[in-house]
Amino acid sequence: MREPVELRRQRILAVVRSRGAVKVTALAEELDVSVVTVRRDVEELARAGRLKRGHGVARSTSLAQDPAPAPAPERVDAAAEGGPVALVVPERHSYLYETLHGARSVLDEHGVRVSLHIAPQAPGTERPLVEQALAGGARGLLIAPRWRSAAWEESDYEWLAEVGVPTVLMERRPRPGSALHALDSVCSDHWYGVHLAVDHLVSLGHRRIVLAARNDSPTARSIRAAFAEIAAARPEVEDWRVVLSSPDAVASDGRHGGGSEEGAGGRGDAVAAVDLAAVLRERRATGAVLHGDVDALMLVQQLAESGVRVPDDCSVVAYDDVVAALGTTPLTAVSPPKAEIGRAAAELMLYRLGGSSGAQGAVRRMELLPELTVRGSARVVAVPPQGTIV
Image (cartoon, rainbow, N blue to C red; front, top):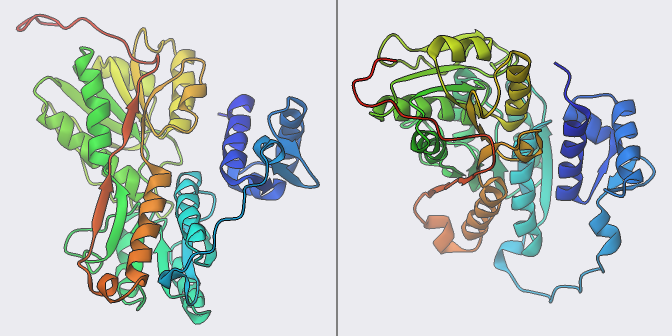
């Protein structure tokens, strides 16, 4: 299904506002649409006064309106001395781009040079970029590998453990006991984020809940595993199911890496995209958690076309909160602290680069908690008396 025009334009605005200025060609690549389409969108947004248009560039209106900031006082910072810190993130990954900009803001503030490397969408592409950065004098590495499948992830463990400079993983938590277990990392506590979503639905009386999630990233796999654990452990949840949220929601190499989520009554995971409306009717589910929020808006639209109204027939909580508020029905959403992840990772890197205490300090594995923003996509349902057959 084609992405709605207004949703695409809101995504353009979100990117432009977060970066200040973006080339039209870069927007087209990131949004995976034609340059002509993006140029037309930018022209309409500029005409409406929502951004500024230059020669091949879209600029935030705040850049034109806000006075130039006063120069920061010169500071002496031991971490600012030496080569750059390499930042490695996947291409066309808006989720991690917010993390990237959070990290860069901290490093810029401390006078630490940044060398940015964008990894193509294929296994093994991060390693040559890291080697190139090290050859160019990088003395630290902040990295968020794509890792679309578990096999892809584990293939990077050995070389990444031997980089030889301070390294911090951003929004990634390697398998316990692996070669990267003792590597500094900063990530969202996705278990807690899923808990917020499920707990909200349960508090509204929902007892039969479906998770429609991607399965092509470490975040997606964490969400799927957390939902299976939480749903199975909650005595109020009578039935749950995990399905794919999108036809392209699995790793391109065909290895899903997510395992099977099992529960009472033969409940389990699907390995292909399904008709969500049919699953909701089959399971008699009244609540759904949808990952991520762009997929969530598309799924809500598909549900409406199938006669399932949100929230009247099904309450929805989106996982991620970039565009969740922009749907016809604004979606209640879990918001991982993406920019804060980048800032915390950069601060940890500065600690490592700041002297002997940082170089010798214990490994740090930080988790930041997501938040839940309640909007209009979930409502109270009646809970049948105990023992009632429905």
